[in-house]
Amino acid sequence: MSSKLDRRNALKNIIAGTAAIGVSSGFSALAMDKSESDQPLRLKGNINHAVCRWCFSSLDVETLCIEAKKIGIKGIDLVGPKDWPTLKKHGLESTMCNGAELNLVDGFNDEKFHDKLIQNYTAMIPLVAEAGYKYLICFSGNRRGKDDETGWNNCVKGLKQLMPLAEKHNVVLVMELLNSKLNHKDYQCDRTSWGAELCKRLGSENFKLLYDIYHMQIDEGDVIRNIRDYHQYIAHYHTAGVPGRNEIDDTQELYYPAIMKAIAETGFKGFVAQEFIPKNADKIASLKKAVSICDI
Image (tube, one colour):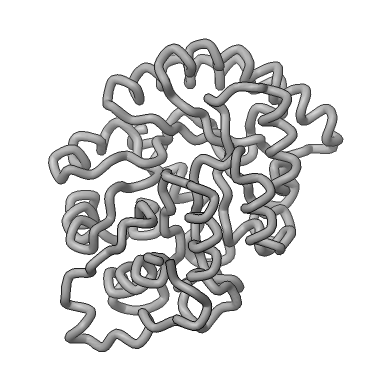
């Protein structure tokens, strides 16, 4: 991550605690003044909105739930079992569960981590299902000199052992696409095509991809075409502004209304989670604007 708040460190803390609008519409949501930002959003229902816990770590989980609910957000990403009761109290879903992964760099592409990963995921999958949730994050890990074929083979070898349990409990393991150019150097699942090939080799509907729009813009670009070409392998989306990983407003290069429209046109019914690091003092106002921008 490229800011003072680093997702790698934030995730360590979380794990330790665990665990249709056209282009002419522009960034109209960005024009909200203070009085408008205090008003509840009237969401259109075409996008299911979520937010990533670690980006708002200055707020406790209870406060984040309260503020998210006001905006119309339906769930919170990257939350483990310890905080699920708080989400349930506020009628929010754990939209991308975590807590089974070791970290972002030691993943399924390396056999030496398989025993511990399989132990962790074997314990976590039933917990996710018992709580009424569906999605559990996982990571490829860093290459450490491994070519694509070795990475795919090792991932298949490890993940295949978990697929029967995931299928039994109707839990989907979701591997995140991260950029290896800037934030996560040497990460192996750094291209949509790489992740899609892994999905094909596993051949299970209980393994999908988390398409992080920020990360994939950095590593490969061509965001809308890749979403259209690979949407059948994608279970979840993350957002953030490029460059900087901050607000998704007109200070950055991605045009999120068009991206959201492309996602909706694929028939996607999952969640789009905001994963930007707010620069503005009023972090909740930034979150509300982001949801407005994405609510096509």
